[in-house]
Length: 346
Image (cartoon, rainbow, N blue to C red; front, side, top):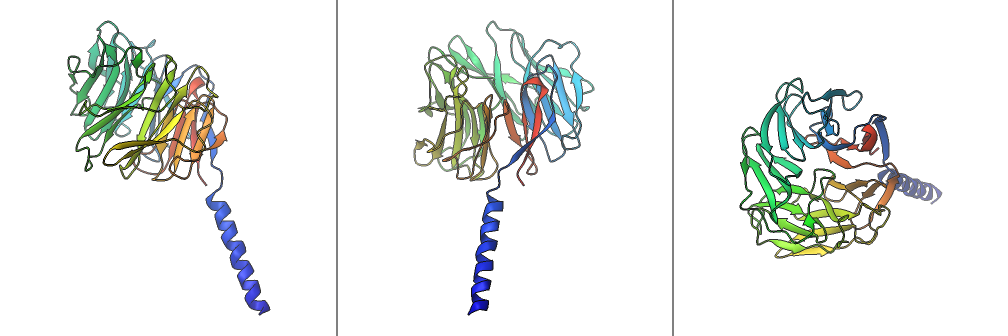
């Protein structure tokens, strides 16, 4: 009996240890910081290839998993703010310059040279985010004459079709945040939505809208009513059944009220508030798998292990954007002061 008891106790201890290891707190490894570039564009191609973009016309690229970055100031665009970037490999990348004239540039030689693939000097033009799904790239911008601006490329950014006349009408004071390049997601088709590009708005009104079918528009149960409030970022779960949206009030970045909501795509679109929300304003969110999410903002970084219902703060460091590798499990974050970091899950 004593032998059986010892074996039983050992088994219990082993399971406890495994449970602790499974719930270990991730750490943030800062790779580089200390320059004057505010980084909001981040594209993680693989475990090794990472591109970033930001203010002062700067673009950074790593081909060794973030151990070193090669920095490029795009000639002729030294004062531009490249708020978003989409990369396909270590050679091909597209960067988005936000304001008048709005521009999109492309490189095919790893950043050595860039050429303009889109430019628009319309008064009030301000691009906010872009998202790539294969060769298709969708861009969204702030309203022109009361309607959201859209541009679409079906050939990796070589040619663009602007949809200024067909833009979605927005409410007064409703717009988009160019905070992390992630308020736009091209979704995989499902039973309910055969074609969907989901965008989230903020400001005096906050909604989730299917840009492919403008009838699919839903008011978000998030903090809103001021220019600094509303949704900032959306990501769709690997199954396509859920999405998670974060935001809040960037002028009061420690306020947790109304800063996150889970979306379920069923026969109708439904919303669920987290039981324990992220710890303040959050500008970016990403699914690592169906249950695990990471979210970041100027007041810190949080993790959820239960599909977004409970969030745990893992760092007080400020970041604007977080992204998972398109191929692989690597997770990187970027923010102000040239800060780039890698999330260590084990």
